Image 1 (spheres, rainbow, N blue to C red):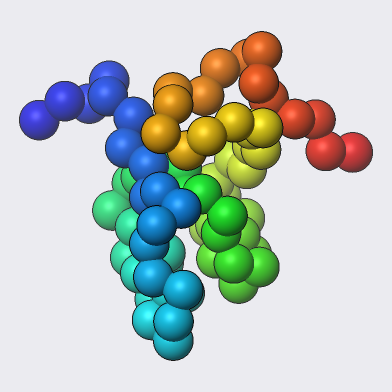
Image 2 (spheres, rainbow, N blue to C red):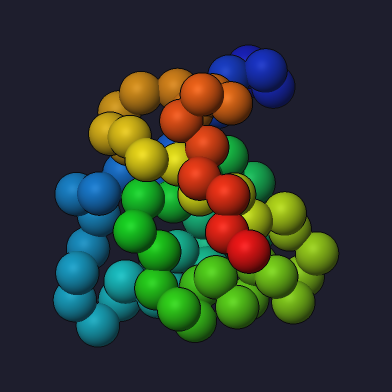
Amino acid sequence: MFPATPVVLGCAHSSGKDREEIEKIAIKCGVSGIAAPTVKSTRFAKENGYEINYYGMCCGLVPGERTKIEIK
């Protein structure tokens, strides 16, 4: 519907048993980002060819180059 609009699974998503499953479904559906993802979700994304970027900002804001965190 809005392919240029970023969709982020924010920090208020589940912290319970279903957290990893929700994140995996979100990744498969093409979300632009996940706030504070689990290690398993990050691994799943990497294994499936997704580019992982980290940003130091509120998940309610659109990420940009100025807030990108370089991980070496």
